Image 1 (tube, rainbow, N blue to C red):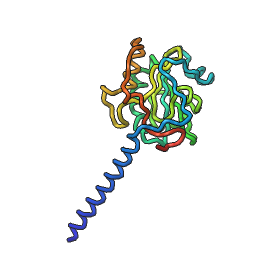
Image 2: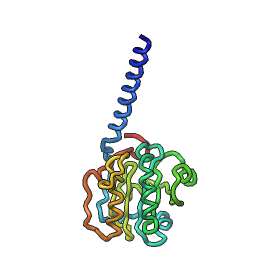
Image 3: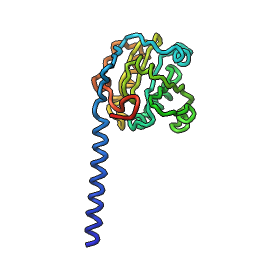
Image 4: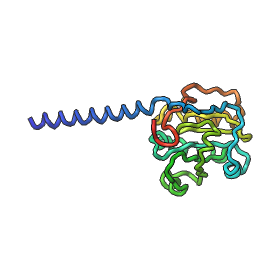
Length: 203
């Protein structure tokens, strides 16, 4: 009898955990609602970043990859390994920066330490950067060419757990831009925003 109760309790507990997990996954698997006052930035458009950001991020006239990141957003945290891999592979040809999108304070040093970034990556806090790039959720990847024109704004992969090379959208964008392929097209799955609404971690 006791064994039966223990087994029943374990089954009930496992079922509860599974339901919570899948509800959580379903929540962050839905597209992020587009803000009412959203101003879209089309591909190829010149992005007017704040002058302080341009001075910091374009020392060599390289393409610029912006990682819009909220440390409180589960999607952002799961996404960090993919960002780190891109920095390691393309860091000599592309400028990388993290744009913190959170009302909380996170120091650059704390982020470097917590996420073990391969080398110091500039960390910025400026909502004007998100607005200039048409970003309204985290995580999002934005790739600008050396003339600050939008080449890609979208997802790293088709889901936060996924590292499938075939749907590695951010990596494909980097390869396309560095290869001079301005006719590269992306699927709706790559461009539709998923994750946490700005500026807080709400869906």
